[in-house]
Image: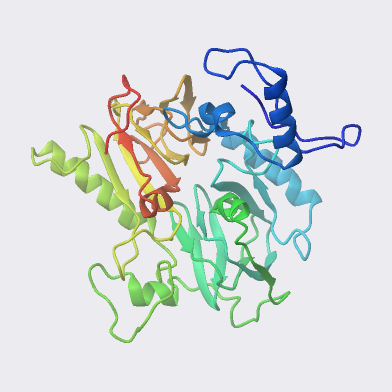
Length: 393
């Protein structure tokens, strides 16, 4: 097979380089074939017969690989950055992104998803800006920071999920005497590769009226009532209007599923495995156009069946401990650890959690993925039987 080669300063001729190879599935190497390939190079052409194995594989072969980041290490490094790196114009955020080992050093967790730990020091503000990238914040520990979205101050506490659709003004402020860390999730890599991104600076400082600490944001007071939509609200922009999904409601939903299962009435996705998806209360769709978010609870001793899916995911252990397997990698995980599931890699998890390391006596996993993109393009596939390579739906 031939490989297109990018030229260097010492080799400036053509950015496409083709090499004839002597294999049964390729044309016979002759002077005429070599002349043809030189002509292709000059005209910046690449023949399909030399590339089909890479361009059209039998099943997805992700450029990303499974990888695990330990929360203990991430938080320690973020704390060091808090002492050394100011928050302000330039960096904008003290956010430290996960870089998948095989994505060329780019700050991308997967080819479509960004994940980072963000750290805010006591009394510190992160300045206002907006961007087309869809984003969320998820809190695995601590409290004391308020994110201010369009002037609406939203509290951030352990277990809270805070989505924010693109092109909304937002800033953060830490109202306490303690630093706080959380994870950010965005579709930066997707918008980067599609060349669709926009960014705009906002105010350097928020007003005193916005630097408040309400128990509930205005968005929660309007939208956080199950099954009820405010009639005062007309047309909505893409993405959920609810800016905070409180952990108390997520926890209750997961606990109820396992309780219903124990009573013999089902309620779980599989034995010992409760799961919920965060949804837009106005439409029932995903909270963000390009990102799906879920919370999974696996009862102690339960193990999920292996599953493959097109598209990639980032998981964070919210609570408990257990063992996760992604492709040929297996790790023991504890609270805060993050790991990647690339496209079409088999994933399964076993809970080893108990009362000593989990508030729920279970392994709780927060997951976000690029599934809405694949569903919109009709490219979504799921396979529960990993013994075969063909897709099922």
